Amino acid sequence: MSTLIKNGTIVTADDIYRGDVYIEDEIIKEIGLNICKRADVVIDAKGKYVIPGGIDIHTHLNIHVGKVTASDDFYTGTVAAACGGTTCIVDHMGFGPKDCDLTHQVKVYHKYADGKAVIDYGFHGVIQNINDNRLEELKKLLEEEGIPSSKMYLTYDFKLSDYEALRLLARQKELGGITAVHCENNDSIKYLKEYFIKQGKIQPIYHALSRPAEVEGEAINRMINLAKIAGDAPLYIVHLSTEIGLEYIKMARDRGQMVYAETCPQYLLLTEDKLRQPDGLKYIFSPPLRRERDTAALWSGIKDGYIQTIATDHCPFFYKGEKQLGKDNFADCPNGGPGIEERIPLIFSEGVVKGRIGINKFVDVCSTAPAKLSGLYPRKGHIAVGSDADIVLIDPDKEVTMTRDILHENVDYTMYEGFKVRGYPVLTMVRGEIIVQDNKFIGKKGYGKFIKRHRITHL
Ligand code: URP
Ligand code: ZN
Ligand code: ZN
Image (cartoon, rainbow, N blue to C red; front, side, top):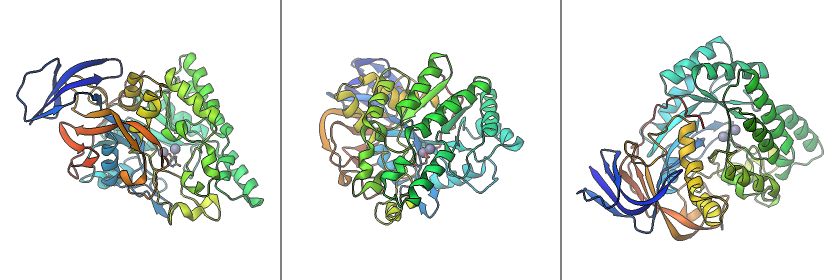
């Protein structure tokens, strides 16, 4: 099977040029001006941007949390991702039973995804405790399972102590892996939640007020210092939401530390006022939404290169019956929100079209840098000879009003209802197969492959 994409404007993380892309057997075989080869399928990309497919390295499909399960599974979630211009995800696995070994959840997640995913995928390891066995298992995870990154938490049920974090960081450095971390100070959240709830302050806004910016700032600063103490171990900070956290990251990167940061569209485009609305429960996730000065700082952080990736933390629950479990107390609302489908159009429109970032930076933060920092590059995240033909066409003139009804996520709301975007993905190809055309999924259930990732490419 061969495909020729003609007359498009090819955009990579560091280049933009007119050209054709010739694809054979899932792989990009040739790039050039006026390629005159016969192909089974010819796509006219005139007037469109031809970009490497989006890579979302922070999703939670099918995750079980307490009484509820995320409403998108590996089929519906990846269909939605594909319709939004994402061709590969790396999913953060949920916690397993106490004391389970590191491969326990990998087996569970292969069962969730196999035969369902429509785009390629990987998993991040999930760290619930640290002992000699876990440290040994990290090697197996990296070398046999294709998982070089694992996430640890400083809050929730399986938070690590500083001692455990140090051992994990040092071991990942030794193996050539990377530690991803959820940075929130657990005791501060516990104290503030009790403080507010005792006074009957149980509305959604108290979710944010019980997790102020310093909760994230303290944890980021701590983890950065622990990474240094552990022998200058690499660190990947997920879902950065605050200016104060960014300040600590800047300080560390300016000192030459290997600290990377990810933010998400919700922290760039929404503020905590959403939690004061009657439907504020829709916006309960952790870390919470912040103020305008934080959103502005995060855009600058992207522009200046201190933030390398934009992922989604897609973790959807139905408003009706699920998010509304928190109607009498914000603390009972499952944490998480949808966004896997909205990311690429939102960042293109709010970032590139509005002049906050250039188009190469857009490709970098949404595809290339996530591929590098998760061990997928250059197979994915790039348009180059030899890379997988994971390609998205964006029509820069297409105007769309974001609304639940045009999206494919299995959930009853979008956090971006009414957002007017300019520029939208009109074709999504994974390994040479067109799986979405004009917002219609035409791919096959189970086409997505698990990708064994290798050691990361440092930036
Ligand atoms: O509230 C959130 N973000 N839920 C997903 C789990 C996590 O911490 O990333
Ligand atoms: Zn997290
Ligand atoms: Zn998450």
